[in-house]
Image 1 (cartoon, rainbow, N blue to C red):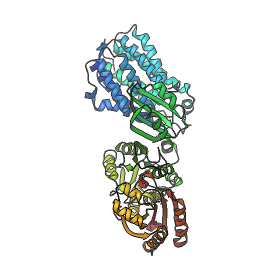
Image 2 (tube, helix red, strand yellow):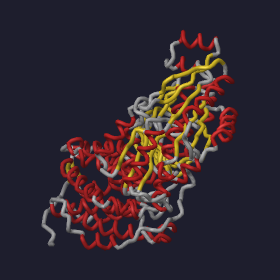
Image 3 (cartoon, rainbow, N blue to C red):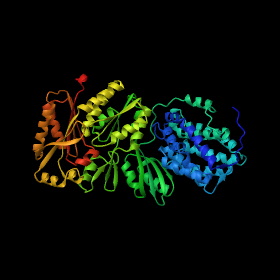
Image 4 (cartoon, rainbow, N blue to C red):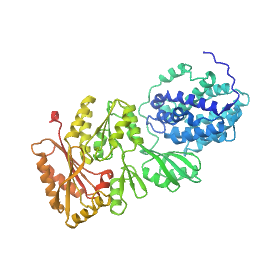
Length: 605
């Protein structure tokens, strides 16, 4: 196809916006290929997802960036990309356009020379955003591309010709990344972020030359990239477990200061934005520590935490990719069972005083119960974040054929409603079930579902077993100290004080809908133990091959006592003891015990 003669001697806001939308669409169409070759900085198969997710905001809402002045349009684009920036590559891309906006700050329209100079500012801003920039990445391509177009712009006044020639430079620079980073050389792939930047330029060139998003112009190039095989499991460049992101709002924020303080306990640090609003990306083992540090400089929002190890396992590990198993942190299951069944957990968030905690990520069980015992602050939980639900189910839909989600009982949280609504927009291959349970009861349901997946049963059969487990789980609770129920407003103060004075201990259960109901009581802890065992005998009469689980809120001695008694009385098929998550313990407090049991699935008996 011959190139059309369309001399473009200036860029204003309208042309810039249209070019950006065309380039973004071009990259978004190639999202999967970028994910497939992603090995740096960690092989978590999401560079395409992050770059496309960052740029998609301007494609979906073009009116939000519309302006006749390039200064105004570039600022609107920069702000939009900052708010939607995802991952390492997406954050770098956002900072590049922040720098471009700085370069266009006083311009209504720009010449090729103006554009080239602003591009140099943009590439420098992108490098400054990264705490430990590496050669052979998107940063290298941005720098080499902008350095060369400065030279070209001296002779070239037509944007169409300038960008066409610059594409050759970007492509050559991108190809060299394979030899500049050892991890890329071993995997025999180019840097995914660098390729994404080249795709963006490619789409812009197509728009400038043809006035539309010409889909078949680059078929030959696309076919060459299709031949590139996805790499085998590479070594991760990050030694940390969690990929953490947030927005930071403050005054006189300085990216170098924040990079320096985070570098003591994090890597893959990218700090982008302005003096008043920044997007932070970092890999850490303690996300809570990162947020603690950032709160010294301002307030945080849109906090997102992803488990890098889980993602690497999903993409490269020896797992069943037919069915993903998802739950939330109201589910209590020992770590080795979570690993065995490759369970994905969506965290609940807990407000405690002025702190917003993320269950089992920014705070662990032991620390949480210690705080409860030593503060008057009431711990309050909210339903699962829509953003967390969407992120998780989009991830499993991308990497697994089917997904089954098992969530906290509907009477206790509306999270299942949110989950069902969100997955309805993602895939028909995702099924979310109301577990009608919590805590170790939900743990036993998840374990039963995990066994069905491990047995490589068809998805329909796995769903059938999971539903059967939800319908047949039974669970009992005891609360040691009523002050936490009183403090949280779940027990009237007058009744609670009388019960405390009389040393009355309630015995509760989850009813068939999953609602937590009191049904008996005992005087004192020892009598309560006897009452619990009597109730277990009554409820398990005639049942065999029972799976048992015992959960406790910082009360391991009592939990182990129950385990010994249950083993001698019921000879269970399996039994485990674990701590109860802060999500549930925040309502009942330290000392709580939960015991659940589930018969083996009939065909497995």
